[in-house]
Structures are given as structure tokens and as C-alpha cells.
Image 1 (tube, one colour):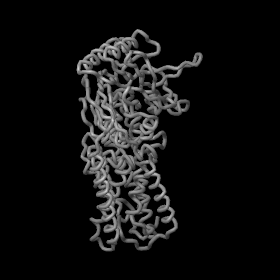
Image 2 (spheres, one colour; image 1 turned 30 degrees about the vertical axis):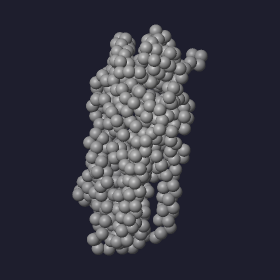
Image 3 (spheres, one colour; image 1 turned 180 degrees about the vertical axis):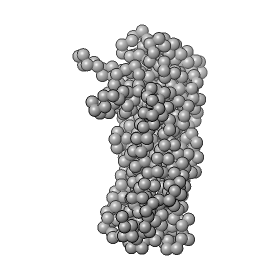
Image 4 (cartoon, one colour; image 1 turned 180 degrees about the horizontal axis):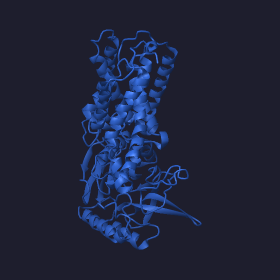
Length: 525
């Protein structure tokens, strides 16, 4: 190919140095998230990639972006191999193949972002106008494409930086993502100001814009952190049974499992009057509807504590000879009566069902003990007497619209019940936890999280993680949560911020498409 028509040098190969720079961007990206949690790296994570892509045509920029994506998502999601080999019982080579397919798919997004940026640049449009929009819009696309996998959205790296994430009650997690992508672009353009032919107006304009947005975000965040919640106080007990995954569905261990949760629940009740007790996902390894002897024992605990109980358990619905299984949460009233049931609506592919099962008959689910699950189809809230609770089962909390849907249905706080035993002693439980800080801020509601093997936690409406348990230990976490009476812009309008960005991105793309390639284009990323 004659690269001279791009006004660039003739590139017959990409230097090894550039591949290493792209990989370094991926390393920075992965380290920005828990458990490493080196969040300042997020603000420079793309700079090595920008440097590697200087003077590259869009195709070679795509290749370098793909390498960065492989490094970033590979480092972030290494724990997939623990899930597939230890609990899926698949050979290591199969696990590595599945892992590579997932990471390669995710790497397409950063590759596309940098490719589009270079395509625009060789037509005379500055990366400042393209990359932050491309990155944020592609992150949003990843949140719902192919059932959606928003794990590793860049904004989540800031979950502990409370002043910078309060803006999420307007923008969702994509506000912080956009800010980080913009900062990376501005910083690199500023570093390259001394390069011959590099225009000065873009670093200056970008610096002014970034300074304004950072100041506004910090000012808004500090103001929000000073607000005092004005709702009722609930005393909540989270029960962490620490039941090993390999015995969780073993009938021989059923009695021992129930006994562990009974003992820990009675321990929690000694701390004073409770409003709510929460057991994790599938804590009851039986069908509450079909096992009155065991479900009565849970009802007795609710009566003893005089508190409502949320208990994770599978559910079954029968239509003649046909049975449908659901991953559910049951509510036991303080009188010990089984109340409403909330069903998981977003299932885990290959965990709770097999996509395209007829085309993939050799692929089996990794969840043991029950047949394929079906999704729930409605939001069901639980009355606690002081405010309704919306329950997010397993990884449902990584999808902002599900949390928002429960709040719009009247939930005053959110409950996440999960079983993160699948992840082993990896960084995944911490990554999972970090996303719930944003669900709290987006909707200005507290979030309580009961996990079978940890991390159980209490999160207030500012996203502050007030208390946590350790991994792989029996634990009881008792604490107060304060409800609020606020309704946020994000709760009412959803992801309108990123929709506006997508509109702006579309305008930029149309403008770029109409422009001719600039011969001898010298300004760099």
C-alpha cells in the first residue's frame, strides 16, 4: 500500500518500541482498577498509545489499539481463567482460548477509538475533538452490545475519589470516563507542543476546557458531599456464610449450610433491634416454594429477630409438565411469612444459560445443581417499613439501567446479593464492589451488599464504602444506612449525557467524512 497518499511516511512495519508502548497503555489501564487501584494511572493511560500511533495510518493505529486493549483487558480479567478451570472444570487450554476470545472482543473497542482518531487527524481534525467522544461512546456501546459487558468502564477507576464521582448523579459513570479520556488527550497534546508543526491552539483550548470541567466537577462534588441525607435510618445485618462453591449444591451439605446461616443470623440479632437481614445469592440451597420444613426455619428467624429478611434462593415456575427456573430473592416479613419474590432479569451467559444453545450443544453451563435459568421480567420491590428495597442479584448491579429501574419503581435503597466465590482470591470481587459505589451516587440511594464469600459491604448515597468484610471468612456485618428523599437527574433521565455525546460524535464523524485528506499533515496525536 502506498502510504504517501495519507501524507505520512512509508510504514512497512511497526517498530517493536511502538508495540511495547501500546502494551504499556494496557498495563496502566489494568492497574488503574482494583485491587491494584492505582487510579492516577488512568489519567495517563493513553499517552503511551498516543505516542506509539504518531504518524501511523488508521489501520496501523487500529493494530496498536488492539494490542493496548489485549494488555488492558487481559490484565483486568485474568480471573476468568479461575472461573472456567476451577468451577467450569474445563482444561486450561480451553480456558485460555475462551479468555482470549473475550479479551480480543473487548480490545476491539480501544482499537476502534484510536483508529477513528487517526482517521480524523489525517483529515485535519484534532484528536481533542475526537478521542474523548469516541472512547466514551464506544464504552457505552460495549455496555449493551452482545448482551452487554460494561466491566472495566474507565470511570470506575475513580470509585474511591468521591469528589470526582458525585457528577454521576447527572452523567452516570460516563461523565468521569469522558473527563479521564479528555485529560489524557490534553496532557499528550501539551507534552507535544514543542514538536515542529504541532499547533498550539489545541493544547491551549483543551487545557482551558479541561480546567473548567475539572473545577466544575470538583466544586459540584464537594457541594454534594456536604449534603446531609434527610430520610429514615435502617439498621441492616449482612450475613456472609462463606459456603465453598464445590459443596454449595451438594444435598449432603444442605443441612450444614442452613445451620451456618441460622447461627450467624442469631449472632446478628444480638446487636440490637434490626430492620432488615440479608442473606446472599442462593444462600438457601433449596426451593423455598417446595421445601416448607426448611423455609419455615427461615421464617422463624425473621420472627425471632422481628425483622424482614431477604434471602437468595432459586425459584421454580410450573406450566403443566414444563418447569422454568429463576435466580431469585425472597422476602420474609417480620412475622415470618413468605412475601414477594424478585427475579434476576439479566442472566450470566454460560453461567446461567447458554446463548445459542442449539448451535453449541457441546457447551454446558458452569452453574451446578439446576437447569438453565430464565430471566425475570418485572421490577419487584420489598417493603421494609421504612423504605422499599430493590434487589440486584449477582452482577446485575454492573448495569446502571437495572438499578435505575428499581429506584424509579420506588426503591429507597438497593440490595445486592451475590456469590463471588467463583472469582477465588483474585481482584474480581473488588472490581465488582467498585461499581456499586456508582449505583449509589447515580440514584442517591444507599447500597447494601451481601456476598457469600465476600466482599459484603455498606455503601452510603455518596458512594462511600463505609464498611466491608474480608474475603473467604464467615462474617456478620451490622450497620446503619440513611435513606434520602432526593430524585436525581440520572434516575429521571438515564444516560442522556452519553446520548448527547453520541450526537456530538455523529456530527464530528460526518464533518470528518466530508473533509479531504490533508497532504503533508504533520501535527501529531
